[in-house]
Every structure is written in structure tokens, then in C-alpha cells.
Amino acid sequence: MRQWLVDPKLLCQQHLLGERTEILMTIGTLQMGWSIDGYLRDKLLEPSKLRSRFKELTSEMIRRKLNPIATLRDQYELKSYDKETRKWLPNGQVRTMEELVAPYPGPYVDPIENIYELSARCFDCRKRMIAVFMGLGYDENWKYLHEMDRRGHIRTNDMSYVCTSYRKVIKR
Image 1: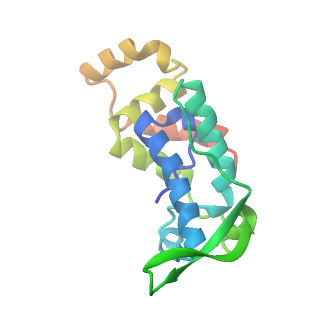
Image 2: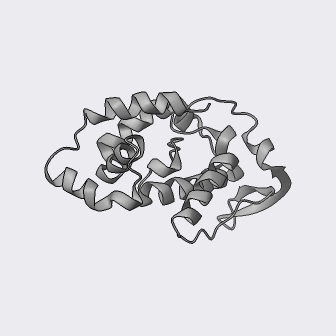
């Protein structure tokens, strides 16, 4: 599970859908009572921003004409493992999203580090980042970016420009 916490416009479709799915998985993990300490220690997750981040990602999906189906609920029923039936069963306790994430105040995730990580990991994200921060827009200039890529003009060193620009607009 990982939250990137960068502007959703910078994420390729795969990372956009993946982060949204992982938010739902995180909520399921909290419902089961499993520990997320390893994710927090490795700075991969920020539970206090689950709901707001989910809304941001959903808005971006709608903007890209994707179909977000899953939604967040207001309350979650906690579950316990029954050894006899070998199933997770509701234990009767109900918590709101805020109560589920209360033991984990943030911040944990560094969006600037994640910009570098995404640009090194995903070429489509890197092209989106360069296009957005150079003021090109992304959807309108795909052919131009593809030609820049083909000629080798999109390189990792462009990310220093991207990260400097991102620091100016980041809101924490």
C-alpha cells in the first residue's frame, strides 16, 4: 500500500487507479485491526489524509472520463478472526473513518521524494509531470511529448525543474 500524495494530474492512469485502490485496501486493513506500522515507518502511507486523497483521486478520474465505482462509507464495522470458521466476522464495534485513523497522526509521506520516485519508476508519469510543469498541458500535447520522448529530450535531469516547480505549489 502506498500513497503518492502528489497532484493527481501528474499521475498516469495506472498510478491514479492504483493509489485509489490502495486507499480502499488500507481501510480494509484498519478494519481488520492489522498493523500498518511498517508502512508508516517506510513513509508510504498517511492515514489522516485517506478521505481527502480519495476525493481528489475520484475527481481526477471523473475529469479523465474514467468510471469510479467504489465509494467511502461514513462508518466501518470492525472485524475479528474466528478460528473455528476460519472467517473474518463483524465483532459489533463500529468506527468512523476519523476514529480508524486517529492513532496515526501524520505527516509521514514526503510528496517531493515521491515525485522523484514516480519519475524514476514510471515513464508515463514523468512525461505528465514535465508537460504539466512546463505549461504544456498533457492531454492536448500528447503528440508533442511523444516526439520529445522519441528524440530523447525527456530525461531524468528534467525532474529537478519539475521538483522545484512542485515545491512552489505544494500544499501541506
